[in-house]
Length: 152
Image (tube, rainbow, N blue to C red; front, side, top):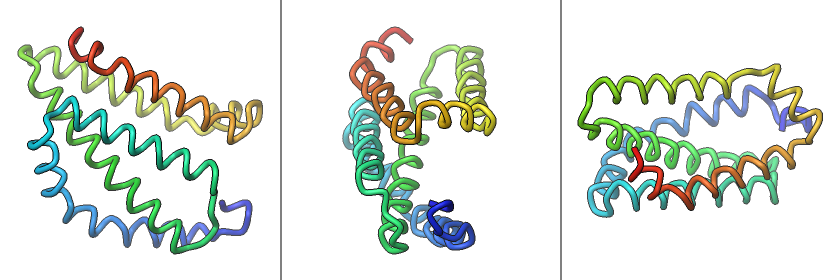
């Protein structure tokens, strides 16, 4: 978006403004998780996140209002996903395994922050190719989510 002329300052301002209502929505997210259970909540949130990613790939809007709406939805869904994952992790019976799993998740998150790797992969596959591969991996994860949680 920045290459196409969308200001980085505008994007940062939108992100900061959107964070306020997302914080207030955490109680509603907790009610959703309590009502549907962790497995169904995680599956639903991941499918909604994938739908939002697919929308962004297809539309890729430069409109500030549409960017604000998609960032709001994205931050809300990602907050819900983090809440469900931590509820699942903290229900593990062995505390050492809980710490190991959180360390594993943080290592994966740090791996996702490698800008040089992102640049290399995006330059070879293209932005849409990388986004499509990411959605495919996430959909496979959603499909096997019940088996993965049963295994853990």
